[in-house]
Image 1 (cartoon, rainbow, N blue to C red):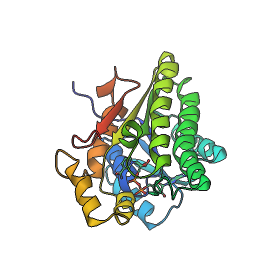
Image 2 (cartoon, rainbow, N blue to C red):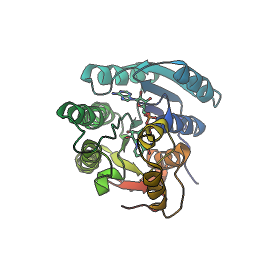
Image 3 (cartoon, rainbow, N blue to C red):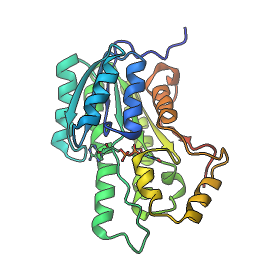
Length: 255
Ligand SMILES: NC(=O)c1ccc[n+]([C@@H]2O[C@H](COP(=O)([O-])OP(=O)(O)OC[C@H]3O[C@@H](n4cnc5c(N)ncnc54)[C@H](O)[C@@H]3O)[C@@H](O)[C@H]2O)c1
């Protein structure tokens, strides 16, 4: 039987008030997960309307504010899910930021912040989720990398480096955690239609924007839902023999 259902499973998605995280959270609810913990820095009107949309699929939803680069916040997040539902099956480490400054404009503080939010959050999410999962039958961890982690990226030096770190962390986690029945995979999206990309594109000239689009063989940017479909694949048993992988979702772009 085809098994994309997450029935009875409990899922955490970080940085999920908007953009790709939001689409992933909704996709997990559509796949009928039992419990869905939605995290973001701020629990605002976006997060509250997402909760309602997810609940319409019959999923129970918890909204939990927290900064995923803070160790205590990550522990609190995982405890909240376990206390409410008594299990944790899928951890999606999606929270991330991008500054879109080139090498000369990037300061040491910019570098520290991007590396901290992107890499440290994925590390802490993977560490604390797997500490629980290893004693409770295993699970699936999905880390949000980027095509920039493979190519180096074409805007800022810190972003691609942080995402390359996440790809390495994913490979390490896959090897270390396989014995506990925990799979770890990464998503490597290209240009996806979210506020992050709107902000970054607003700094480009028209010619630079045209060049970015012409680098995509499929000739368009992707939607958050197209990334969410890949997240569901890694979360579900359809990918039961896949771990340590980084899946490009780029419309064919590999530069
Ligand atoms: N949009 C793209 O084209 C693209 C491409 C490749 C990878 N990504 C990655 O996908 C993820 C989501 O990106 P997006 O485009 O949806 O961005 P976005 O800016 O639209 O949304 C990111 C969300 O993460 C939250 N967040 C930021 N720092 C956080 C923290 N420390 N703790 C908790 N939440 C935090 C933000 O508040 C926001 O709601 C990021 O990791 C990003 O690097 C995006």
